[in-house]
Structure formats: structure tokens, C-alpha cells
Image (cartoon, rainbow, N blue to C red; front, top):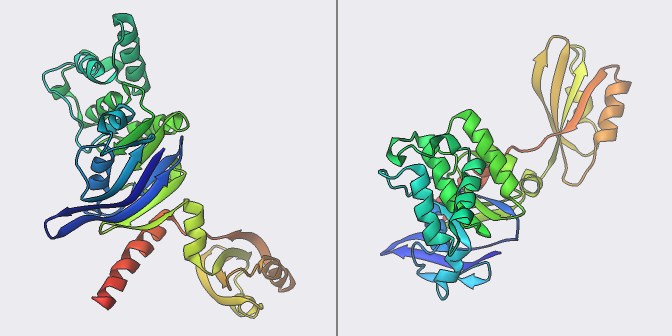
Length: 319
């Protein structure tokens, strides 16, 4: 549904987006991550036809955004960082105005039903007669999402859609975005990493204008962890570190936590070496009660930091 090939955007000597390539399948929700200034918003603006690229190609719903911009825009809904509202219009007036621009020819009954539908989806019915300029930031975000949906686009490009929302509104917006996946293809930019883990099937991580990873959170965890890690909790105060360290294939063991009568260990093993059975046997034969044994996964925060900081360290070494 979206294909980006070697996309580059330069401002004089500064390169904001540097040879970016990725694909988004139909119905997929893709998380677009990166630190401030990484090039996320610039990439999204190019995808939506808001600005041209210096080099490269972007195709949305089968249409090149440079050679067929009108057709690509017809199939795209865009929520920028700052929702494009007219402060003197009421919410209903604004959505009616936007529907005339985006939704083509409809009779009045069809248009009214379309507006009611997007207001229900985005939970803004109670603000229908409120001037956009008098809305809270959270409601402005929701009205911005409603205008992106008004023409029922195949593709949604959402730049920080939960910015400024309270926790309840964030949960409602996440639920809405998840419900739109499948019928819409969604690219979601955010700084809130748990939001990506809870909403998106795949992740693109961008840093200093370059893509540093494209994969599912699970696959990124597997690739970056390298060695496998287990969390083992045993009963009793005795130290099991030596016994666990002696297991073939175990690289290192450290105590991760202690609580009343229990000790937790992080056991790191060689890549592709499954030591769970040997760990369980060692604990039982040692007379410790086995309370818990589970694989440990890197969090999305750890993945993000490892990718972005390792790239910067690599640049420093070769700079």
C-alpha cells in the first residue's frame, strides 16, 4: 500500500532524510519511531505530498506522490503535528467544509451521515457546536483525526496523534487506531514507545535521517539480544550463582533481585542454546524451590536506545 524507495530530502548542505526505504502492507499499522530531529515528520510530509523530495520515490495506494499527487492525496488522510483547524468554525462547520473538499459529491443526507460517523468514531459529538478555537488540545487532536477520516481514505498518516491527550483519551485513541487497522493502512509517528508496542505490527526506527531498523518488535528483540536470557527465581536464601554458572552453555549469571525468602537470577546463555531444562534440573537437584523460569525480552525502550546510541557511537568512531 505504501512503498518508499531511496527517499532523500536536503535543505542546502543539511540532509534531513537520507536514502530512506521501507514498505507498508495493506491493512498494516506501522510505527514510525525516532528521536527529535530524526526526519520522521519530513518523511511524512513527503508521503502526503505536503513537500517534494530531493531524490527518491514514494508510492501510496499505487500512485506516485510526485507524478500523480491528486490521486495519491485522494487515498490519504493526514493528521499533522498541529491539526489544521479554522478557529472561528464550529466542529460541525469545519468537518462539513473539509468534506466538501475531500469527500467528493454527496447529497446532504450522505454528507451529514458521514460527518456523524467520524464524530462518533473520534468521540467529539458533544463538541459539534463548539468553535474549534475554544477546544482543548486533546479535542483539537480528535477533530484533526476526524478530518483525516472524513473521505474514508485507504491510507492514514498520523503524526503524534495522542499528543496532549489525557490517559483516558490516549486509551480511546489507541483503541480507535487499532480498530482502523485492516480497513486502513496506517503509519503512526510517536515518541511514546509503549504506544507502538500496543498498537503497531511493525516498527521503522529512524535516526539522523537514516533508517536503522525495520521489523516487528519481537524480531528486533530476538536479533538485538544476541545471547538468550532467562529469569530464574528460586526459594531460599542460599546463593545458586555458582551452580547456574557451571551449566554448559551458560555465559554469565547475576542476581537481579532479592525479596523475603526468594532470589531472582538473570541467566545469559550462548546464542541458539536452550538451557531451560538444565537450569530447572540444577535448581531442583540443588534443593532450591523453583518458583519462576521464563525468557527475558528487551523492552522497546531498550531496543530504541541500543539502535540510536550504537549508531551515534559508530559515527563518533569513524568521524
